Image 1 (cartoon, rainbow, N blue to C red):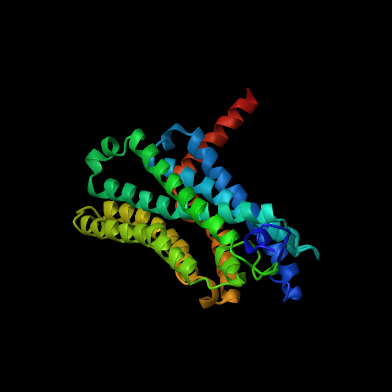
Image 2 (image 1 turned 60 degrees about the horizontal axis):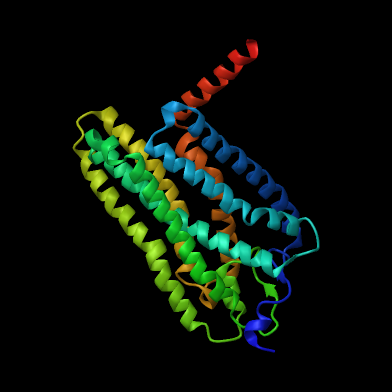
Length: 314
């Protein structure tokens, strides 16, 4: 049988945490609670940002896209993981695996680039405050978001088919809880040096280039903040930028560790827990870090709730 044809037939078995059955029940409860909180937190951010006119600003436009990304990113794999943790069936269809891989790579790439766009937004807000609304006009914001989505999807369109078509010589067991690229590369029964090199090159473009841009942007931001005379102004700038930097650190730390050293060179056990961390913990924390502790969002929630109560009284 041809290796390419063989690689496109049958189901995969997601081994996940099946070697630790005592851990599966605990993980099921913890992940289910975290997933529900993630859905609630990010959906709240999207609704509040869309419904409250005071939050119709570039910053919250980008945060709405980030929350939508987090919802999609988490939902692309967590329901399947919960199903596998709750029973003996660990299989996933070839089509399901392909969709999961495509979404995982695509949405992850979009988020890397969107975080760079958000860093540029903070740079303009701090370094060019008088021209902020002119520079960050709706057309530019929409264009930046479109580029992030386009590049992320293009990266996935390149890497997903190449990864899935690797000959596996009958191997069906994926040593992971989802169809993730390094785990699928590790299953191949051919030399994967070429594809690992391609992954590295694309990772430089999708992962490291935005990170360098973020660090340069914050270099200018720090220099501008140091020259702010008002202590309240410095505090506000550090608060806003600190939230973004925290999320950047959580997200990029995991991504760089896994994708800059794919395949056999990375530890699968470490990879599983790191993937779980940025697949559920980071999307869970993002609403808290970015907005739920933000006075503007608290005020928007209060206005919406008060408005609903007044409608109820009427």
